[in-house]
Length: 119
Image (cartoon, rainbow, N blue to C red; front, side, top):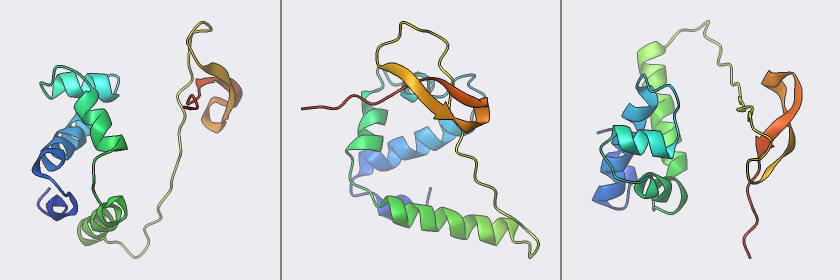
């Protein structure tokens, strides 16, 4: 966190980002704003959601800082980065905002949630 701390405009999002990363690295069976917030001792997911949606921080600079960290610690001339944008398959058919959507890792079209448009 010391490497990326300066990328956050305020102290609170910086602290919450640290807890978010630790939550993502934890052994939680499901990782979303609710479960990570509860794991971090918060009473609701609103702070985590604020961090991801509205807080002021330089996401591109954080990405670059994390890349530098990885290169420093895992540097290998033969290394290859594989990016897998995995989607979560939704199990229910009565969930709000569920529609058919492609998720390649699930082998075709499956029901997934979509973001609602706000007016």
